[in-house]
Amino acid sequence: MIKVGKRRPKGLHRGTRKQHLLLRGDRPIYLSQEGVNIGAKTWLDANVEHAVTIVEDEAATWFELEIILPGNFTGNPADGWTDGNMRLGLFFSENLTSWVSGGWIASPGKTTETLGDGRNKHFARYSPTPLFWKAVMIDLTLNSNRYGKGITGLEIYQTPVSLPNFPYDMPSEAAQLQADLRAAGYTGAVISSVAAPLSVGITNHLPSGPRTLQHTMSGASVTDIRYKGVTVPLPGYPYAMPSQRAILQTHLRSAGKSGAVVRLYGDVWTLFLPNRLASGTVRDISVVFSPGDPYPNFNLYEEYVGEAPANREIGSSDNVRTPSGAPLRETLKGFARIGFANT
Image (cartoon, rainbow, N blue to C red; front, side, top):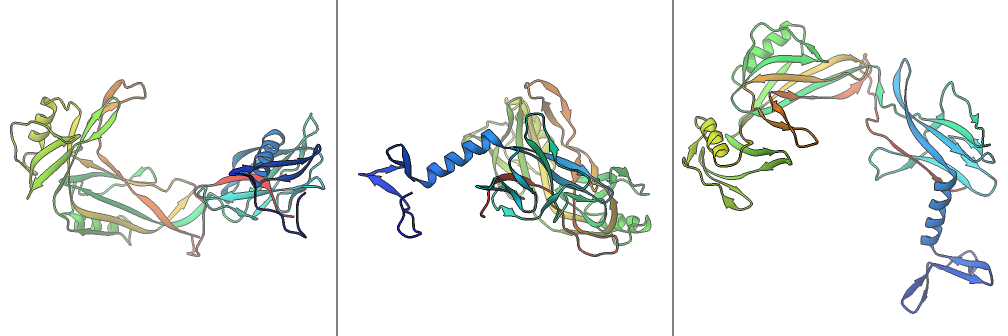
């Protein structure tokens, strides 16, 4: 190959055209980086297979790979595999942007298998972090800014929680909800709220998907609604909120926006439950509220399948740690690839 000492050219051009391959007789003496990349990908596509598997044991749920390589490659997931001329290694990413090597081990309890065509199947586990730890302590958080709603049900880990004073109007009865949660054994429960002005969201739900309708407000009244810059003619402008929400929705549907739903938003309230023990991957929290904001629902074939109630808020979990409180890390998303590694 063309080089001066150990240095190779970054690129060769003929006039303004970049050259990717230069031959001397029938022997290649220069190949551009683009050519190298294309050749490497072609070789990998033809000779290497890999598939993701999700494996559970008593401690966690793990991200694993099955890798099929030509039979003349030897090695292991930690060090990579080589045929004496090239070396292949595994790479991991949580976001498809940043990739890291290392952290792979042979899958516990599995050994390399020789396939009928002479290739070998290897098994690898990404060992630094599992997808989920089985026994953990977490914090649960749920936020909502839906206006004029009363909580009629609460589920933690998909199990209904029995409380004495349903429904709880939010956020005005936040203190009562907090007291009842603590009395029910959720001793660290905190319900807080942040004041926010009344606002409106208007969506027209169609078989082809939802369409947002833009609007203008003056104080607490809707004075104009537009779609694609054109005002929707309605008989009742301005519509005072919250008292005329239902009238506005009815007028929109009568004006041709048949799937229109008008939703109201206000103070943001937060339900926080710290230090909850969890087992497995079920770690959810949700509330059911009334009244809902039902909307027309359609399947993938754009067929009407009834009204969706839109009466539930779903929270999240974080701060994963051992049951005794020591920090733990999980890899909630994982991506893997196999490629050429530096020797």
